[in-house]
Length: 121
Image 1 (cartoon, rainbow, N blue to C red):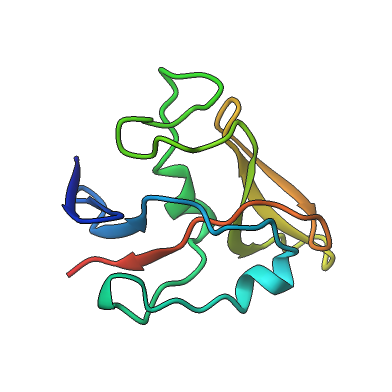
Image 2 (image 1 turned 135 degrees about the vertical axis):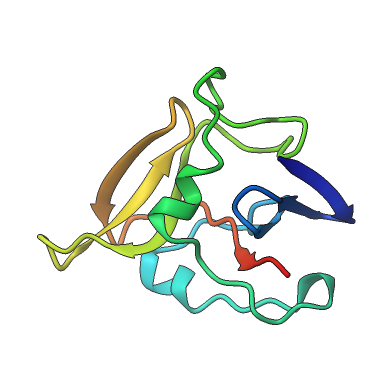
């Protein structure tokens, strides 16, 4: 399912996604996270994942962090923003808590980690 085809990039062949192997260097509010741009690996179309895309990284056989650390070795057991707003509350957006892999919604002004994705080729 996962392959490391380029330094720092993990390809998810099942879902046709390419992930930055490392998180962005800081924590961001949701609005700040949506503005992040990157030309990492020669690609310029990195973006925040949808909540559905971010949940594909969760490995429920693992705990603290709930992710495959062979491919994502530095993932803290913490929250990571998705690019999906939480429709019932305008001040909230979806995130994933990689301590246990749960999807949550939180205030957009909270400072969370960010992992960028792009569509595969």
